[in-house]
Length: 300
Image (cartoon, rainbow, N blue to C red):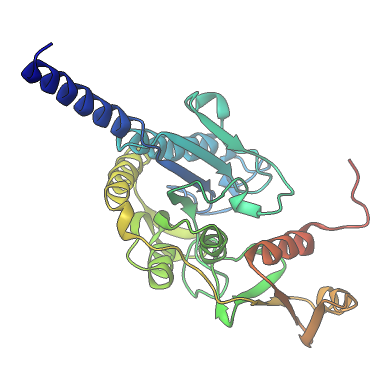
């Protein structure tokens, strides 16, 4: 083999190695899917097994998740984890999801709606999300529990679930890149997290009323926004909080804070409120899951 031939072979080998290396570059995406922000959802009739429209809207929720998955893979994602994060955590029709994803289901989970997230992920997508309990607008607006809580604050800032979950992702240095839901949560999330991509699938008129896209239009919008978010993925920064983190929770009733204050790690700050200080978002998440889940009647 002469010098020219050897150089040509080396050049071809080097280019081939580089191309192969690029093709194998990993891009991991985490999807947390709620339901109140899914296209067409306006009341409890769509949100749980007792509602006459629930089975249909499980299909629409699954359709939104599939739209995001398809777009993410087309944009270069190599691995996707989906968290079923609404209600009983058993809403997505998993047989209709592609085989090359994994799904987190049911409760309890130490990281709540973000179970499975870690530092190996490159970006987070929130689907079907809703506004916070302190937001005066938004379809089914609440934070963690519509029945029990009136405010959840981290380091003094009122949080939507998107903010709490973004802070959990931020603990692992992973940014939120896109959110879908009604206009209220997209505006709220972008004000808190920065210029993330937002797919508005409906516009709130009230707690139980909205103008909405059709499912197919929502899927198309989500696909576009996911692709745009992944194309910009290096522009986004993780949402991180100064530690230790102060959690303030305000309840609708006075007995929960009264009983929780019996724990030495909990301070009762007024008749309806408590404070817990955690060293990081992992401790905050575990405390919230305990607070919302524990009952002496727990059985297998």
